[in-house]
Length: 207
Image (cartoon, rainbow, N blue to C red; front, side, top):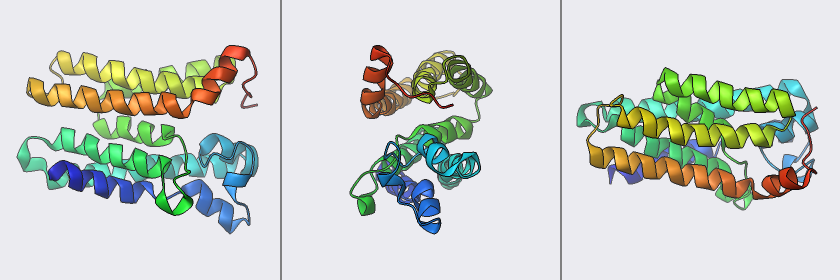
């Protein structure tokens, strides 16, 4: 029941579609412009860097805030970190599949970044920064950086977990690994067209 509550709370926060809201204020339907994706990259291309960065910041914060709230609520249970991750999963699902936009949202990368920050594990944060920005700066492919970020989160969580950083029982660790693996797989699935374009050399560069 606790996991379901966290998932629902996270989903509700994920429904805050920043790029769609900003676009509507500017008289634009972001889903009908550019790539049609309601995320940071398309916001930058369609509305410019200012609104793109605002979108990214808000999408990151809409994950951090509910995760911290639910971790505080369940602080005495000994499962706060795991339940926080379930909350983050809900945010990603809400962002990717908003019911009021016919389940057409973003790809959850900014929300994933918010999840990493909310973990408060500096190893994950540093690895995430490197694994995202280095590929993007070298290749100018945001999709490549996004995939590297997602993969680094999974690898980092497993390494930190096995090293005892999270002080959790093994069954809770395994549950956490599986949940992060599912989120990583979802990110790769939503980027499947980008992966094809990267492989064929037709992916669009950021600038």
